[in-house]
Amino acid sequence: MGSSEERVVAVIMVGGPTKGTRFRPLSLNIPKPLFPLAGQPMVHHPISACKKIPNLAQIYLVGFYEEREFALYVSSISNELKVPVRYLREDKPHGSAGGLYNFRDLIMEDSPSHIFLLNCDVCCSFPLPEMLEAHRTYGGMGTILVIKVSAESASQFGELVADPDTNELLHYTEKPETFVSDRINCGVYVFTPEIFTAIQDVSSQRKDRANLRRVSSFEALQSATRSLPTDFVRLDQDILSPLAGKKQLYTYETMDFWEQIKTPGMSLKCSGLYLAQFRFTSPHLLAGGDGSKTATIVDDVYIHPSAKIGPNVSISANARIGPGARLICCIILDDVEVMENAVVIHSIVGWKSSIGRWSRVQASFLLYFSWHGTSVICYFPNALFFNQYPDNVTKAGIMFAQGDYNAKLGVTILGEAVTVEDEVVVVNSIVLPNKTLNVSVQEEIIL
Image (cartoon, rainbow, N blue to C red; front, side):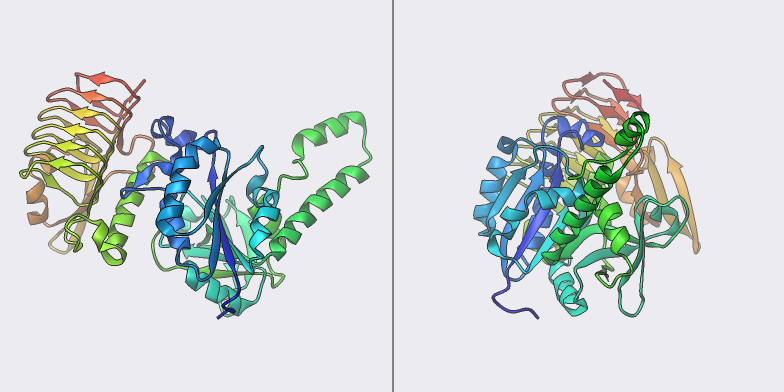
């Protein structure tokens, strides 16, 4: 364990409006980091995890959003957690490592012995105290949170090879074309202040190469279009890859859940993961308070006694849920009305939207079940059986049902102020704000 006088700071990269285009139409109304997952803003989950770090002095949020967009939230969360939280706006892109270096003077004001660096669009249990303890044991400059994934999905992320005995990072490559390892970078790090020297070295080497280059004007023009600015430093390609195998970087493997939140569909999956985590870590946040229901109800919500809600449902402020409604694996945002006998499954319903009587807003389903010891997967494009007889699903031996969270139209997303009229079915569709649907649609983007 470190000295009680050692101080730690945390930096959370939140991106900016040009970085969250895949999150539309939800990011049209609210910055992606403030979109609610399990009833809390996305960035709230890593911030809450940082609160558990011993001797935490400060949390910095770094991004491209206007300061006014984060001012209210930063003030609120600072008061709630009793930890200073500050938003720092980048004037231009500096890269994942360059952005850290750009604010080095502010970050080092508290003379921290360690600096956590987290990405806002990561969903996991954030074992930060355990990472810090392991990092101190390793004695290197940095420690990376890693997880084992399937060989098929590994190439979508940064793959790495670590020494099985010492956990030293031996090799790192970002999104390789051929398989390297089933261990991937989770986007959560802890560094000593020496990280700033490593970043500065990259910038200095880049400047030296530019000054020493003696080429024709045409070659210089071509080279300039390919080269990066000297103050733009990427953590993965410019820091992790070159320092691998030099006894400076180590890994800490998590056995818990991990996902990357790039699309609205993944936000729905991650909301369910956080709700499941709350059952063990914060049962008071769940409806009922004892973990018996995986639903989060925020502020003033009316739910008719005959409505059936759950599992994995988050309902925000001023929502109204009518008689006989059925909600499963969904996010209901502020001021939404779900009228009598409507069904919402694997969907996100945007602010001030309305779901009419006997309507269905849903995804297609893959139903997984066991039949005489044999696993069977069935595709239901309209999920009629599941919607009309949801309680019979369990009786039939079905284990679970889910949409395709990664597909562009894997779940249904309704933007702000969308009206779905009575007896209308919306399946695997994205509907932009202020639209009225009076006919059923399937696998469409309604502009």
